[in-house]
Image 1 (cartoon, helix red, strand yellow):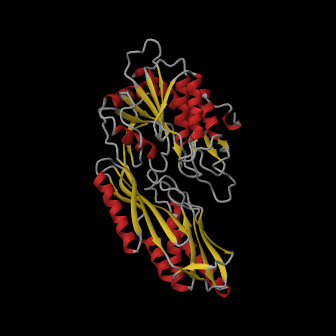
Image 2 (cartoon, rainbow, N blue to C red):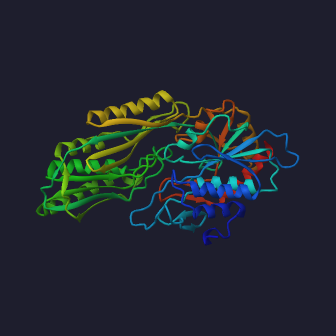
Image 3 (spheres, rainbow, N blue to C red):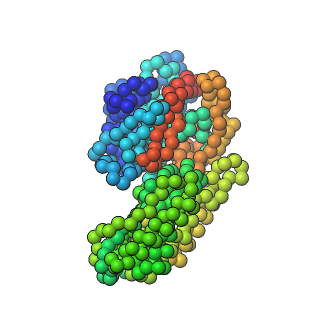
Length: 482
């Protein structure tokens, strides 16, 4: 076992998380993780089925004496967000996640940890192997491709499940029970640009780095910097004062992550380099003052690189930069019903230059379907005004809270017995698979809970070790009570 995990309790959970650390499981590349799940099912002679896209369902009979209990399912997703700090040597397709312990926290070395949703999956596997939990009949659902838009859940077929209760293990805050979530949609903008020969005699790379990033739903209200927007603002000012020619724009790495890094390769005569450096220094100070404590480690730098042979036509470059500097990023509206809950938001997630095509990816979220679509229309309109073509995809529904449902009452009762106080009922401004799968199973009662995970979708991701112990204790008690 990995040394950082060797002494951790509960051992039955951490051993599976340790195994998952060694298994590459980027979105759409979960085959090895699914094989691991199936190996556990085979070892314990459990029934296993899967659908056409690779979602897996395992069934386990009730513990002796609990055969008449209502069936419940435990659900988690096999994939993880693959983010790393620049300069970190890690191949997510082949390399195991390197972990280290920092007091009561477990984190990775320069990459995402995969506690989202690796801890939930590990807990489900531990229940599959258990012989001492007095649970009723169980189904286990392991979905694929959650992180890139809940597409595995979207393809999950109706008629495959029998459970009355849906226990999602993808919540990220102890002492809370999530009973609702936002829906979302991806908006892709593309524009073909004209390329021409560069005039500037040297190449330069303007780089934005040091930002916290984070989950585009959970962290969207935190005021953190967006590397793509900051880069666009820098380029806007540079284009007003210097004859820069833009050859390449890149930034962000996932539609559901706030961009931490972005860069542009430009051409400029070497004689103007001191002016460029002076401008970058000034803009760095201004942006740091603007972000303040929200994102204190922002860095804006410029370095000499190979001169680009081709650059983007000035008008095309200007339209693109103006769009990136104008597109809204962040909260659009707060909930009038749930204090502190974001109701509508949009995330400017990625920009990429692919030959003579520039792509801009954004995502919009809302618990209200019409508001979600309205936000997507707003973004699409701005993109079309800048000459971009639009494609919407990956739309998924929200999950309406039912605070008085039978399963919520049961979980609250168990929480009071285990921890001495009720849990906080929350709704999330993030997509959970409960809403997507549950829509196909009317009447299924749903909740989501889990340990405390901070900084998901970024290399700052870490899981609170003591909260995992509490999560496991609570999960076992819940299964014995329903």
